[in-house]
Length: 72
Figure 1 (tube, rainbow, N blue to C red):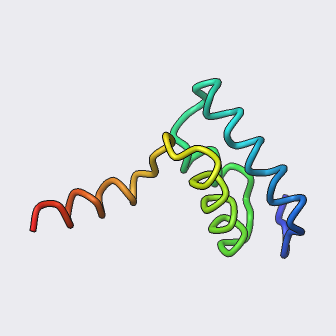
Figure 2 (spheres, one colour):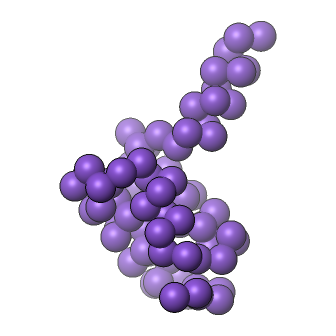
Figure 3 (tube, helix red, strand yellow):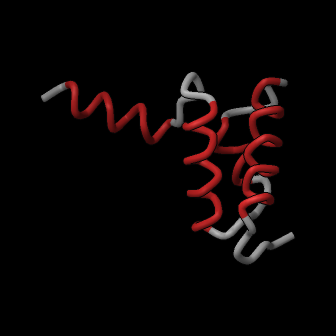
């Protein structure tokens, strides 16, 4: 199921679906997002919405970036 450019409503829907699956411990958030086979620009929008809604959900690439910047 490939998706082209998603509407704002669909981005919100995908964001909530990802958060629900994350809360059910279905896997790392990155794996959950990628399982929807979205276009990369839509994945970025979903990630941004997740970060806005749930700052307690951490992404692996953010953790490694934060660790690298704090090591300096």
